Structure formats: structure tokens, C-alpha cells
Image 1 (cartoon, rainbow over the protein chains, first blue to last red):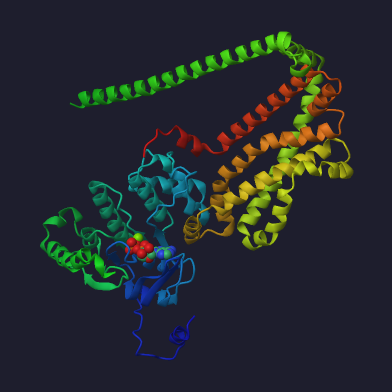
Image 2 (image 1 turned 60 degrees about the vertical axis):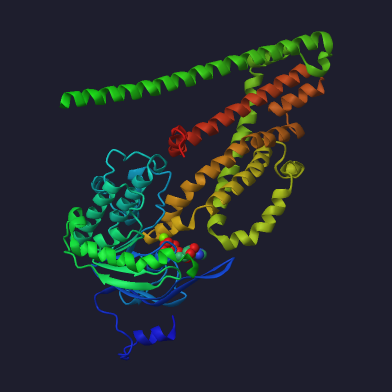
Length: 281
Length: 286
Ligand SMILES: Nc1ncnc2c1ncn2[C@@H]1O[C@H](COP(=O)(O)OP(=O)(O)O)[C@@H](O)[C@H]1O
Ligand SMILES: [Mg+2]
């Protein structure tokens, strides 16, 4: 632990450091991450300062390779930032932050377990009685639209179905915060919409904090309370926007909503230079 | 309206079923044809052998199929075959079980305890590079010429194959997978039971399948060197009497035993890994 953090944790008042708000769940302070590779060191993200409040639905959007997954990995405690700090409820994140559930970009289902078995894993770890676990899994599989595939092995599922299985597994262990890395990328448009509605409803009903990574700007705006736009690599925050839409918005009708249309258009403009200028890295 | 829908669904299902049936039928026809060709091959091979041993080469060198069959039949009737085969099976089987159990345990342990693995690695490799049958004289000294000496010899050979495969299997478990499990609150014991062992199973069976012929090598070599029972003894005995046909008969008996062991491993493998069957049955798609 760096001395600065030790000081901040001490009871000495230091008003000049921006205090972490009481309701802040995940806090990135001056975070940078450099990967050491064979080709030399590579800065994935730099100067990220971002607070994610409890109960909030935040989307992270940016071109691929800008370090979105890296940010989630640090919140989950898979590795430390090279500079700055990542904290959870005011404490520095230690390896394996079990208060968060992480739906990774690759689904990491166990190939030797069928769908039910995969979703069952977190419940087995928690020691939930078998009968109860079965009931819960059944409900979850219905929620994500996988009924009828309980006995299928991952190798027999499509990419979208595997994602839904991973989502059911994530919901099964009911973590405080959900980190989701491009969860709906592989889904077709209708299903994607259905899952977006479902995940927003679940987050609202259960009061979950969600950090949702996507490279799709429309998705980023439509489901977020707050949307963080990143620049190209090395990624840093280009803009944070509060999405001025109702919390219980109707995602189906959004395409006709002017606020939504204007906001996505504006953010498109913001990201557009990044898309043209490949020469800046 | 609903009725027509239902009937369309019905015909679609019917078509699908027929498609599957005809695919199965084709597969079966192909299987039958292959069987026939094999049978023809065996018949021709035996006929050529028989004729050659009667008119071309002395049966002192190549035996004679009819003689071989007669020997096998006589052994089967007198119980000799069963007696010696059961001795060899017991040696091979117990050695196989012992060697693979210790091999699996060591493989899992070292796979998860990296430092330990690094420490013992050079010693293991030294031991591994030794042809294990060269240990037979030593084992005779330690364990005598009874059946336990063959069991230990077999176990030593099998151990390495299963150990190395299990170790590789355990090491190949993705770190991401383990991290995900840890995020779900998994402890080391959960990770071992739910991820490491099942994902190493494929590798373990690889090792087991490879080990079957080696298990027999252990048992047979042990018997050849010092024994008064077992198929290896039968072989050595026939050779001592310059009875080539009897030697072939013993070899055939050994082959049949190897096939039976192989088959047993395959059956257990299928039972242990139902998801593999699902993957194999899946029609290819990219
Ligand atoms: N473990 C790693 N080792 C080396 N480089 C990495 C590693 N993880 C990510 N990177 C690099 O960091 C950059 C950001 O990666 P990532 O966070 O996955 O981006 P995004 O999720 O926004 O597409 C990429 O250029 C990637 O190659
Ligand atoms: Mg990513």
C-alpha cells in the first residue's frame, strides 16, 4: 500500500484530496495501467478518475482496445493498476473482489457441465441445498430464455446462448455489483433488446450497481444512467454524461425519443475523430 | 389455422426424423461394408500363411495357422489358457491401477504446487528417461519372482505416463477460469473438484489409454525374465521347446488381453466424460 493511501485511511483530515462520497461503490483515482509485453511496455489506460455510485447503471463505451476490459479487471481485483488506486467501498481492491460478479468477454463456461450444471456452480460453492438450487436455476434459465436447453453442453449452444448461460450464472450468485463486459455483443437484435430490458429491470428491482462495457454507442446510451466515453488507446475518459432519461424508461420506444437521439448523435461526433484517425497511436 | 400449423410442425419433425434415420442407415451400411472387407482380409491372410507354411517356408519359422488354432483350442479346453491369462491380467490390472492412482495423485499435487514441481522436476526426468524394464533385475532382488514383482514393475511404467499426462492436464487449466471461480467465492477445494480435476480428466484418460500396452509390457517382461506362470511364461516355455505355433498362440492370447483392457478403458472413459460424446456426435460446423 502506498504511503498516500495509508495517510488517507488515517483519521487525519485531508480536505484537499477529493473525498470519496459515501455512496461511492467503485472508485478509480488517477488509474493507469501499463502492460509489459515482449514488444515492450504498452499503456492500456491512463489518468482514469471515475466514481461509480451505488445502485447506478454505468456504461463504459469506447473503441476496442481502449482498455475497458482492463478497467473491469482491476475492479474485480485480477491485477493492480500501475499508477493510482482502485477502491471498492473505500478500500483498495485486493485480489479477487468477491463482492462483484464479473461476466467476462469470453463466457468461460465449463465444457463438461451442461447448462444447468454451469449455472449451478456458484450455488454449489455457496452451499445452497440441491433442491433449492435446482429451483433457482430453473427460474434463472427461464429469465434468460434458455428453457429447453438445460441438458445441453456448451459445445452444443450458439454464441448468444452461451452468453445467456453466463448471464444466468452471474445472476445466480447474486453479487452486489455486476461487471459486464460486452455481454450482448453476440446476440441478434431482438434478443439483444430483450436482454437489455431484462438486465435493466433486474438492476432496478434488485438495486444492483452495474458497470456495463460496450462498444455500441446506442446501447451505451439507451440502458445507462450515466455513460462514460473513452478515447482511443491509451484510453482515458473523454466525457461523462448523465443520461437524462427516465429510470424506468421503455427501451422499445427509445428510438422515437428526441433526448436519446440528440445525445447519441452528440456522442457519435465525439467518437468520430477517433474512428477516422488511426494514425494517432 | 392452428391445425395447419400443427401439421406443418408435424411434417417438419417427420422430415427431420427421416433425415436422421437415413443418416444412421448410411452409417450402418458403411460400417457393414468395412466389416466385410476386414473379414475378407483376414481370410486371405490366413490362407496365404497356411499355404506358405505348408509349401514355401518351414513352419519352424512361421508356425502354421491350423497348428496355432489347435494349440489355442487345447489350452482353452485344459484351462491352461484361462489360468495363465488370469495371472497376467491380474498383474497388468493391479499394476495399472496402482501406477495410475499414484500417477494421478502426484500429477494433481505437482500441478497445483508449482514450487514442489520445480524442485523435483530434474529428478523425475532422470528417472523418467530410464527404460523402466531395466529395473526388473532390481525388483526381483527386492520383491522376489512372485506376482508382486510384476505388479510393481507395471506400476512403475504406468505411473510416469499417467503422471505426466495428469500434470499437463492440471497445468493446462486456464488461469482465467480459475480467477472466475475465485470471484464466485471458490476455495482451493472447490477449484480442485469443480475445475481442475474434470478438466484434467481428458488428459488422464489419454495417459491411461497410452498405458494399457505398457502395463502389459511390464507384466510380460517380468514373466519372461522370471516366472513359472502367466502368458509371458507360456511364451518363454514355447520358445524353449522351439514350438513356433505355440509361441504364436501365446502372442495371440496376449493380443486379445490387450484388446480387452483397451476396451475397458474406453468404456470407463465414455462413462466418465459424457460431454465428449456430445461433442463427437455434433455435426461439424465452423
Ligand atoms: N494481459 C494483458 N497483457 C498484455 N496486454 C494486454 C493485456 N490485457 C489487455 N492488454 C492490452 O491492453 C489494451 C486494452 O485492452 P482491453 O482492456 O481488453 O481493451 P477493450 O476491452 O477496451 O477492448 C489492448 O491493447 C490489449 O492488447
Ligand atoms: Mg474488452
